[in-house]
Amino acid sequence: MGTLGNSFSMLKNPAILKFIMQGVLFTMIISVAAVLFSIVIGTGLALLRNYCTNKKTGILKVLSVIYIELFRNTPLLFWIFICVVFCPVPGFANKQMFGLSSVNNKLLFKATVALILYTSGVIAEIVRGGLNSVASGQVEAGYSQGFSMLQILWYIVLPQTFRSIIPTLLSQVITTIKDSSFLANVAVIELMARTKQVLSSANRYNGLNAINVSDVFVLFGVAAAIYFVINFSISMTVRNMQKAR
Amino acid sequence: MSGLFSPRAWNKIWLYKDTFLLGFLNTIKTAFVALLIALALGIIFGLMATSGKKILKAISRMYVEVIQNTPVLLQMCFLYYALAFAGHSPGIIVTGFLALGIYTGAYMAEVIRTGIESVPKGQFEAAQAQGFGYAAQMFYIIIPQSIKVILPPMTNVVVNMIKNTSCLYIVGGADLLSLTYSFVTGENTGGSYAPAYIVCGAIFFLICFPLSSFASMWETSLKKRDSKVFQNGRPKEA
Image (cartoon, each protein chain N blue to C red):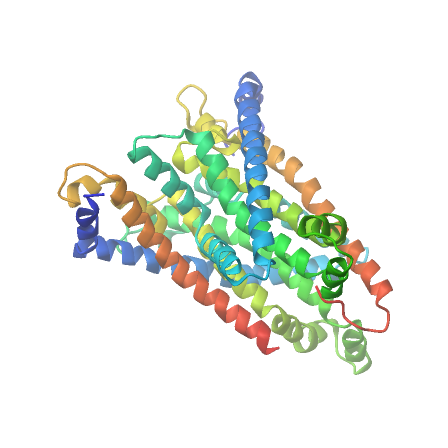
């Protein structure tokens, strides 16, 4: 490992450092955005699956069951590939911004849509678990006080649901941060892809004109450490929350 | 919709059905060998975590935390490139065995640890009092009681692993999804996007859906049985 020093010297290169840190930022933004959108969609799906049980609305329940099971039982990369081909891109995403070319921005939009579609299937099941944990007496009490179904959901059921599933949702953020690395398969935007990109041109930066094993260890080691620090601090937060209850 | 209803596109799929079959077999093979590795690692580290020895516990904890908090894609790339640049390129499928096995092993270890910890402490003490050795105690008393807690989440871990075989794409890919992708983008075979993805997705769904619905049904029935056993509103420790 005489080349270790050269590999570390790459990290002192401000251009590389900036490139990788931007990747970290993209990873965080993509994951948080995906989880937020997925919570909205997932809550909708969970409500449809749980409460559309009568004859008129039964079809909505069937549709949401199909959606949830379909997305939970197929790989994320599958949906990324599909969205890259079929997902339409609105005008605002089709230009140069965030330091990315318009091609990459299009891919970013499409892949994020795939990530949202996939994650919302998972979150729907999490929300449903929370909905089922709310005692049925709560709904009955709401009815007896003259609340309508929508009011019961908004004022009584959903607040209790979300309080009980916050730890699980945070764990899902960890999963989504890991899942966002799948975007590396289609575009160079987030941390994983950028690390791989730097590795593939490491011979130009480490001053040795060749890529060595030490480059792999240093670059992927740094990326792994970054992922670890982010995810581990979230999981510690989750654990403290669960202990506090 | 690139040939969703075109008989020509569907015909092309039928012509190249061997590609999909090969991908399917590679995915199953990868998942199966990775599952064996994961089970071995999971049992070792799961037992270490419940052994009560501080140092073993710490090692197991470290393995689980490091692996669970980094993406499987990164681990796979790391393994592949580290071995490749060291001059021992392991090949794509073997990378898949190792990377998926190690990644899934961490989840298995957690599942097994939770399962063993769900057995009341008195059972361990009673076994020791009756003169059981460690192996006999585990085999005759602890494992039979914890297996019903372990199996449903373990099935979910397996489903996730089957989906994760698609990660092989980043190191060159021989699995179902990668072969589908190279089929639809290939020079001679390209174009029939919709039919190819439908076939690929259907295969994944047909493998994963029975497993995951089986797991969730089992879990529900276990919960029901437990709530019958513990009627006085006493919550069961999970």
